Image (cartoon, rainbow over the protein chains, first blue to last red):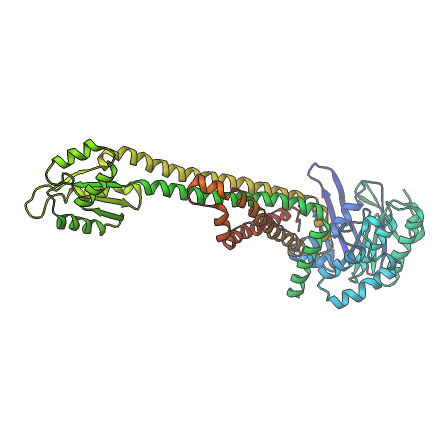
Amino acid sequence: MIYFDKVSKVYTDNSVALENISFTIEPDEFVSIVGHSGAGKTTLLKMLLAEEKPSDGTVFFQSIDIHKLRRNEINHFRRKIGAVFQDFKLLPNKTAYENVAFAMEVAGKSDEEIESDVPHVLELVDLGRKMWSFPHQLSGGEKQRVAIARAIVNHPDIIIADEPTGNLDPINTYEIVQILKKINDMGTTVILTTHNKGVIDSVGKRVITLENGKVFRDDVAGRYIL
Amino acid sequence: MFLTNIRRVVKTGFINFWRNGYVSLASMLVMVITLSVIGAIIFTNVMLIASLDQIKDKVDINVYFVTSAQEPDILSIKQSLETLPEVKEIVYTSQDDVLAAFKIRHQNDQYTLQALDELQGNPLGATLNIKAKEPSQYGSIVDFLNSKTLSSRDGLPIVDKINYNQNKAAIDSLTRIIDSGKRIGLFLTIILIAISIVITFNTIRLAIYASREEISIMQLVGASSKYVRGPFVIVGIMYGLISAIITMALFYPATYYLGRATQDFFGGVNVYGYYLHNFLHIFAILLGAGVVIGSVSSYLAVRRYLKV
């Protein structure tokens, strides 16, 4: 489903973020990408979202070369991916409901669909009561759950989670990981980056370990080893 | 889908305008200043043109005829002058009328009147008072006159003198003053409008700079650039709309207060009257300017932060 083919990324200041990375992610997989800060995890995910272009190599998504997409195709492509970030990236002037609804509006869903799906999804992440709160009125864990609700509302093919638990306490971290596992069980590919040992160990699925921009290990039922 | 998107963009624009209350207020204050400058320039131009016109109106030339000139000859000159496109108005004063006016002017001067009575007949010639449309056109009118100064009957000159030749310097310098007055006015207008547009543009850009994070999030979720940009442009249009209304409202007391003073100073033009009389016209100009400045500023400012 996703294929990184000898991908390298060298930034303009000659720092090498990724070097000759190749791996494949199958549908319905739950893949964790681990590594120290600066190992290239975020660069990898940015390439999947077409935020960064590889200096060399290609990234395929369902046999589409992501970096050959034109500007207006990138928008459509991104609607197939649900993204969750460490800093939540919620729209500060919109309520939880509106943040989730925005992703549906963008995807061209009708008002009826939005009105029925958004409360349902927020209910699913246990935020039914805080539907009309603004992000600044929510705790970190709640914000991340809004972000997850936004990511899954359009039934994407993949969820990309870039250190989603980085700013959360252990209990919230546990809850977020459980939600991601549930999403995966329902048949969505999940790609998670983290440097939290507990998270990796509790997921117990495939782990790709990056070190200095290279794939250091790729274990089918991995643990956090660095 | 297109209509749904338009509706959503407009709605989001309204909500953002309301939720970013302080930013909206600050931006509109700056916009009100811009529109006030534009409005003030409109009023100033009207008064400047009115007073220049008045000065222009005071310029004229008189053609004095010799006493032996026959009335039909003078009237035929008047007629041929009237065919000139430069001529605005000609007033013919007959010999008798000139004498009557002279007597009234000197009614307290017994010596002059007595001296006049000593003379037999009327020593004063008839006159033509000519007004041109533009002060610069007097030269050509005088040239035309010079070619027609002979009597049709006996071939003797009938024009005694034309006072243009004495007043030429004054008329020329007045023409120059009026011209440069207009040019300076235009120059100042352009400079002031440009400065205020730049200030408004920068204010709106700052407001959108605060939203750059939001813009990138919207794009990450997959929003097209049009869908991201739309609400900002709507907000820009609202700034222009509301600012134009506020500016018009502010001009009401301002022109009312200045009305009498301007009427006395600029002779005849009352800004308050002008404001009331041209209310819709001025409002349309301010509204158009505000909406264009607001929407174009927003459009350009968002473009900087659109990555896809």
